[in-house]
Amino acid sequence: MKADKKIRVMIVDDHSVVRSGLGAFLMAINDLELVGEANSGEDAIQKVSTFKPDVILMDLKMPGMGGVAAIRALHQNDAKIKILALTSYIDDGLVQGALQAGATGYLMKNVQADELANAIRSAAVGRLALSPEASKALSESSEFPIVPAEDLTERERDVLKLMIEGLSNNEIAERLIISPSTVKYHIGNIYTKLGVDSRVAAVSIAIQRQLVS
Image (cartoon, rainbow, N blue to C red; front, side, top):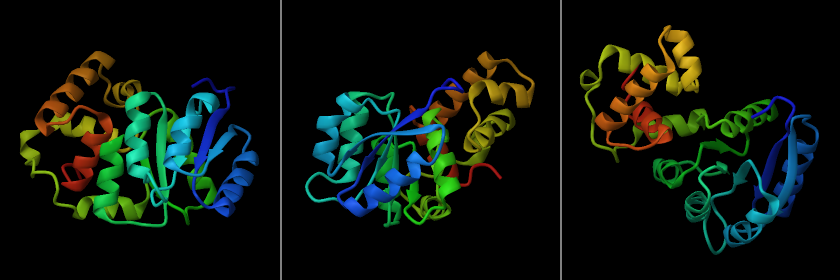
């Protein structure tokens, strides 16, 4: 995303007070732009093509279509849209469900303003953003089969650790002093060994199973 381009944000929440508060927050941040609101999952699906957001802030507990189902539908329709789950609820099933549906992050509604802004910026470039509560719930979940850390090579663990930190392929290449194509090769091996097909899923499993230290 270009440095001078504002990140277009859409809010999906069934409570008007929450939408108003988030809207006021977004309008106070120079590089963020509120482009629209929706009061349900169904409403979001209908409006997303009009608002064309870069990032969606998605409540999970809403009447009718829940947030996880809405995330899945929106992600299947347009994988380029990044969606951050923003909720008051935390459990491993919700965290796992949101991430598996295509969310790029999971945050609590009591998140600090600067942390939310940074999470939106991270999501806009495809970096995973997890609250400490979500990371803890993920690490305690037992949904995925255990993948022994020794199944990953030392270099793959190095790459995976930097993926967890949110670095892009080019940033990983610079940090490890290797080529971007080599990074891509290692990530492909990581996906194969973990049985996943996305960066978010790989990072989720790595956090969950503490594959890197």
